[in-house]
Length: 357
Ligand SMILES: [Zn+2]
Image (cartoon, rainbow, N blue to C red; front, side, top):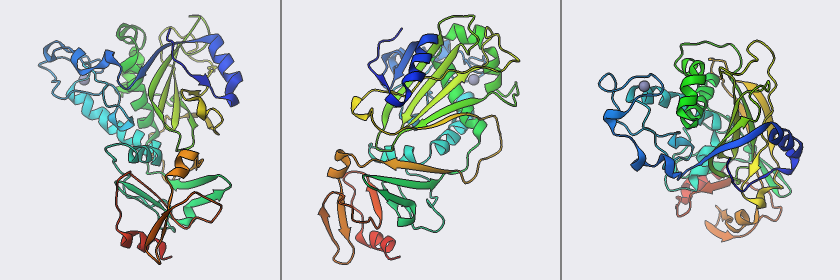
């Protein structure tokens, strides 16, 4: 078992109790985990791909594959069991995961060294919002201003639900014990390799935190306490910025519920930083991600809680006098909200062009 300091969110105490009665946390992987460091990787001649079963010379291992995508905040976790061919294939699935995570991921990156931007989709068809490599400008129509919070409404880029599920399934299989995957999860490997079709059961649940509450990358593995319990053996939780996603793994050989309705007991959102315990969390519940059809125009609302940290970084800009001033939000309506990477200078003409309407 793993000893990590965190607490369940107070809205989810009952869920935490139910989960802790039936499941143990058996592993937690953070960015920087030494078990997956570059220097631990096997020599390329000795590698076997977990996903297609092939080794050299049939396939090659020319890229150093990431254990989980670097799109989701991984900088230091590598794998030596993913061939180049599989790596390219899974990379396409991860694009869909990035689109599903949406604007939060891009916003998180605004605070990091390598902002990656959000492919030029206007936040709303009628409002002049914009997200570039190092800044986000939000038009009034995309912002709802309430007392000490702002709600941002935006449309996600189209994504395929099944690809979102498979990318997270792949990460799950990558961190579970190797022998366990080979012996008891061959159907999950087949599903990932498109050798097995399923029309339901690709469940994911999601919690959404305010977007100024970014969690460090963490993947937790929960295993049921009793082998004969009619529950999925494993549930994997992904902490990806302000998204927490749970994946109940339904394809374990020893799970006896094949054709019955499955009971799923989800872990609650856990918090590593106690200051965030009172933050609102949106629970999107379980949804089946089996569909290969693209989801277009999914609208999401993100909350910005205007914490003190955030207030301290607030500057107002007056396009008439072309001057800026440090100030906190005092209830004055916001015309446009611009969020940018620290140290970035924006041409006032660009700002002015957004503030004309
Ligand atoms: Zn492979």
